[in-house]
Each structure stands twice: as C-alpha cells, then as structure tokens.
Image 1 (cartoon, rainbow, N blue to C red):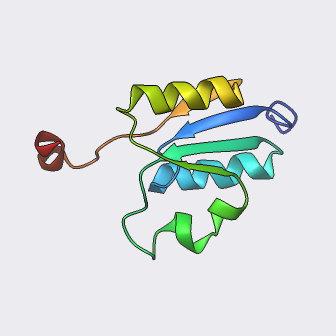
Image 2 (image 1 turned 180 degrees about the vertical axis):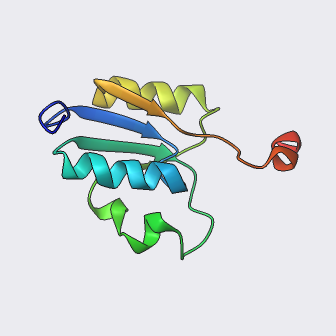
Image 3 (image 1 turned 60 degrees about the horizontal axis):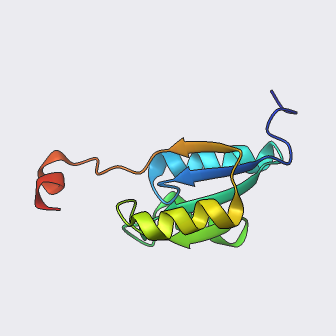
Length: 97
C-alpha cells in the first residue's frame, strides 16, 4: 500500500473536515501530492488548523456546489485519484443551504 499512493496527485474534497484532514495527513505520509478543496474549517482548534496542513498541500477554498471553480481545479491539477468527503454532517443545517 505504501507505494501505491507515492507521487500520485490526489484531490480530497472536504479536506478541512475531521476525516478529510486525517486522510490528508495519511496520504502525505504515503508520499502523495495532495490537493484539497473545501470550505474554511469551523474553528481554529480543528485538526486541519492544528496540524498546519495548509502549508503541506495545495489548499483550495471553495464550495463543492461551485461547478466552474471545481472544474477549474480538475483542469489545472488533473488529479489521478479523488476522495469525495465534502458534506454537511448536520442534517438540520443541510436544509438551510
């Protein structure tokens, strides 16, 4: 498994969230080139902020519903693997957006 991700361009949507930030760190350890696309983290105490991930990857902020911006990311970086973790984890909040 260690060699599979080495030097692969991997896009993670939702990289500022709990699971996305841990996946980013794991893939970095495996030697992947990580591209993250997500909204801002909720707090300054989130794993994403505390781990200083933004300095270790290509960190792009955007809404997953912004088709044009997301398409631009695909065209510019041409990811080989995509992990789609962008989501609204709280059902009530999802009704508001």
